[in-house]
Each structure stands twice: as structure tokens, then as C-alpha cells.
Amino acid sequence: MGVGGHVSISTIFVFVFFSILLSSSEAAIKPDGNDFHVGFYRKTCHRAEEIVADVVLRAMSRDPGIAAGLIRLLFHDCFVNGCDASILLDSTLSGAPVEKESPANGGTLRGLEVIDEIKAQVEQECPGVVSCADILAFASRDAALLSGLSNHRVPAGRRDGLSSRAADALGNLPSPSSSIKEIAGVFATKGLSLEEMVILTGAHSIGVSHCSSFDYRLYNFSSTQRKDPDLDMLHASYLSANCPRPESLLGKVKGNRAVNFDNLSPHRLDNAFYVHLLQGKALLQSDQAMANDPKTSRIVQRMAFHPISWSRQFAKAMIRLGSVDVLTGTEGEIRKNCRSVN
View 1 (cartoon, rainbow, N blue to C red):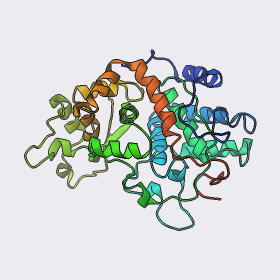
View 2: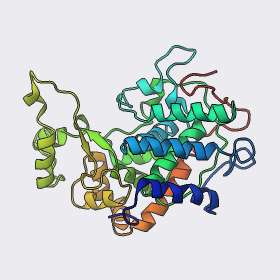
View 3: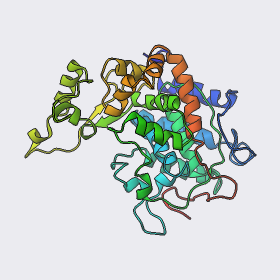
């Protein structure tokens, strides 16, 4: 299930780029004043968003799976001390481990090289003007658009943070086995509602999850049940074939296998995620719990049967996500290289 029909990625880009310029969609919550708004670079670097869209298009042409990585980067950045591009830093002056090294990020972050390429091109066009935090917000928006999301414009004016600590990620990024109460609590601390939590989790209609994040649901769910009873039986068999029991791989190259969240349309951002929840086909226990918890089940059902509504609400929720604790004005800096402070 999705929004619209199947069109080529180049056709989507042409539509998206000109729609970005012409859309009258309003940005959701943003700070008052002139330091954070749609069209922030119109006079200082008018090709900034065009450059971002072009690089994202080419990256997705090579690897459509990079879209999920870019959207995830924004989420993991904004949920740890705000949308300040701290997730992109390789090191800081303190020498302490940075966010991307945190166990909460699992060494699975993708899309970093896309941000590097965008930053290099933007710096050639407008040196010292466009922040890495805004580049990440633009790139995640374009990744979502090229994956099928409704058009939306995002405010800009974010500044880049000066610090990044792995320890800060713990407690700010929910785990695959977190309860609804725990996840909702984390979202609430960011000013995001329970409904927005359910809507944003729809990003799991694209991308992959590593077997290590859910294989306990297949083989070691509890002391009394080997398999998670909420997991559809046929789907569990499919997952078992793709994620063998860990001990069966002794003496073999294990790695960490990955499975598509949606095997039918793995690169299409749509509401099929919620349909799968109702069918008991979610990979992550925390996702499946949304279909069963009385506080979220009605939202899941509504999103499953109203694809256009979900698409529009997801765009609005992404704008709000990208507005969490942003640095503006003279706060922070504009990095020359997204991987290091100036």
C-alpha cells in the first residue's frame, strides 16, 4: 500500500525539486524570530537545497537503501541533545567517544559519506554559510520525498554543535525491545506526542533491521515461550530462514545478517508498515507492541487504512522532529567539515 503509482527516480526528482520551490506548506513548530525559517538560504546560498537534492538523487540511484540511512541519521541526531549535527562528528576536543561510537547506534549508521559529499559541494558554492545540521535536515527530507513521501518544505537556520558524547546517546535512543511506555517517555522529552511517535515509526517501512535486533523473538523469547506469540507463524518461518539460530552458525562466518522491514517494497516509504503490524509481521518487538497497546492500537489502525493521511502527517512530524532543540543565531558554529569542529 502506498501513495501514488510507480514512477522513475528521475521523474520524482524533477517533480520534487520544483515542488520544493513552489510549495506553500507551512513548517510546524519552530522558534520565533528570523533565525529559523523556510527559505533561510534564499539570499545567502540560493542553490543550497538544489545541491542537496542532486547529491541525494545520485546516491539513491546507486543505492536506494541509503534513504533509510539518511532518515535514521536525522532521528539519531535530533534525539541526542537536539538537531545539531553532533552525530556526524568523528571526534571532539575532549577526546571522549562520540555519539556515532555509542552502543545505542550499534555501528550501523549509514549515509555519512552522502553528507560529506553534499558539504564539499556546498562549501565550493557558499563557503562557511550552510550548516551540517541543515544539510542533514534537507538530505533526510529529500530521501523521504524520493522514497514516495508527500512534498514538504523544512525550515533552516540550524547551527552546528561543538560537542558529541557517546554517553549522551544512552537513554535518548529507544532499543528494539523498549516498551511503549519507555519509548513514549523518550519522545515526550523531545516535545513529541504519542501519535507522532507512532507516525514517525512508520519510517520502518524502508530499510533493514539486523537479525541481532529481533532474533530472540524467534528462538529465545522468554523462559516459557521460545517464539514471540505476537509474531505471525508464517512470517516467523520466513525470518528463521533468513536469520538462523545463532548457535547454528558456530564455526561459520556469522556477520550480522539483515532483513528488509518490508520485503515487498523495501524502498517505498508508505503506510504498509502499519498493515504489517496488524498482521503480526513487524520485525522489532517495540514496533509490534504499538498494534497491541490500547494507547496506540487505534492510531495504528487509522494509519493502516489511510495512506495519504499518514504521508501528510509523517511530513509534519518530520518537520517537528527536525526542530528539536536547534541551535540558532550565534549559538554553535558553521562547520567547514561535518566530521570535525572548526
